[in-house]
Amino acid sequence: MSTPGTISAQDRRDARRRARSAARLHAVQALFQMEAAGQGSDAVIREFEDHRIGKAQEEGGAAIESDIELFRQLTGAAVTWQARIDQMTDRALVEKWPIARIDPTLRALFRAAGAELVENETPPKVVITEFVEVARAFFPEGREGGFVNAVLDHMAREARPEAF
Image 1 (cartoon, rainbow, N blue to C red):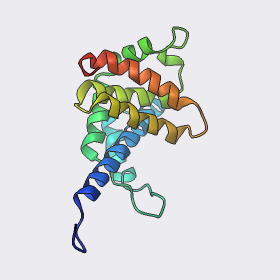
Image 2 (cartoon, rainbow, N blue to C red; image 1 turned 30 degrees about the vertical axis):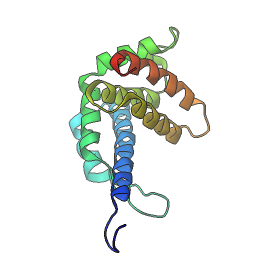
Image 3 (tube, one colour; image 1 turned 45 degrees about the horizontal axis):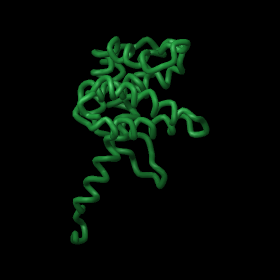
């Protein structure tokens, strides 16, 4: 039990989970912006850190905290490993729909998720669940959640076969 004015361990864990989820969402947005505007990663990362992260509002008006280190890691790793991640994505997609033909938001999402699968110790099931939620944030009315789940499951099995 916590005393008034102190934060419980559960509250800290919940805040960390929300910050990591926000970092994933921001990474997708940053990767989308890099591709759409033809901007480099350093400029986009700086813009997000200076002007976007923490500026979004949750329901109720509280600022959304973001795990800046995870945001930087995912964005940087997605750029570093883009060819590998795009190849993994292509292998997970149907032959007639290579990564170049899919929605640019989904492309950014697969790159961010692929970066976490390639360069992070987060369990693949957590990565998949988190990025399915990100997909639902961008496509609340669509079936993209199921599509993202299937593609990421395939990518995770390729990137981390030992986890399955």
